[in-house]
Image (cartoon, rainbow, N blue to C red; front, side):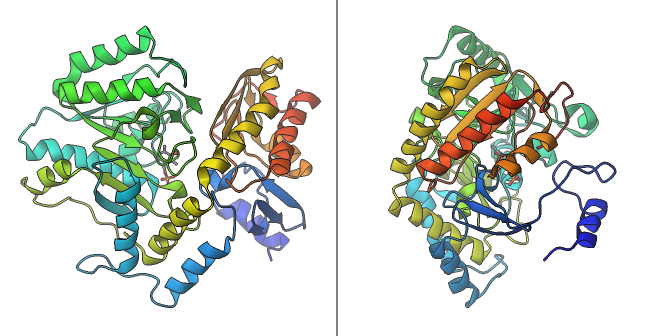
Length: 438
Ligand SMILES: *Cc1c(COP(=O)(O)O)cnc(C)c1O
């Protein structure tokens, strides 16, 4: 159990995500978690609205997932993947080939979402290199995106909210198109169509790949856009010979109401990134899938191999629990659960559209977003939420929910009530300055 001096050590010595060691924000000591509840050191139980950054889709401590880890632990916890293979990796990959959009049947297992994006970028570059095309060196993407914190991934994050300014001398320059404005459920509007067509038409000779978060842009602004946009991007990629990379790290495994967000557009990319909820939030694992054409072109090229191989790739514990999580998704009827959550979020949050502090309310699948007019003081609102018994962590001007799929109606309502209360009590949570707190 953490004591006072350990907490002081934490504040002084340990970096949390996007935090200062000079002016640290409060952190809440957690002792355990079970189902949809997080238990704090002071005994308080919080209803979890975050799924630990969108990962813990089955809640915490699910007995089937725990068993998958302990069963594997008794055999081996880690094993190098160079020159060795094992059942957990093979079974997981068989499952991934079966459930992902058609044609994605070659898999690279790595250790985090950002790395899976690096691998996807590397695949695209090696693909064109193998074909002897030395002009296709840039990526194309849309503004307001987020693809991770490593340098390759950072270079395709939104240039304003991302870290382009500070790191610009170290980042590759890519082509940014304005973010999609056609909303989810609506047809592709003329502005988006023209932006897309023009970008492809004018730049295709230098573009290796187009990278998108399909349907939902996550940490870049929680925006939900038309499936026809994704469809059109696929069509233009085919027309102009550009690879399509879909980053499904946040959207994969049912979060948007389809197993993969690409399914909303009924298309298949050349390369797809998976991560976050892949292991049901039990441990870190990610994957980059590609088509046979991409894989074989890379391997028939100069290098003869895909030039990547992290130490912890295909960790057996992570692979075992990932397979168990996907099987659990199917047996627990994820579709019914996500539809049920969507229904409750719509009915609970929709009237906030009228609230003077609220700019927009968006719900899709098990994602509920309340976009405010002003940025939010994260530390202050977090304190309020913890007092209310919920774990919700807003960023910028966005208060959002991504609950575990197992959450029942009463807990969903409880989360929504806490958001409503936070908007009604005082102005204290709304600030003008835009701090990088996530
Ligand atoms: C979280 C996220 C990443 C980065 O994954 P990490 O595991 O944090 O490295 C990349 N792309 C998207 C869409 C994400 O949501």
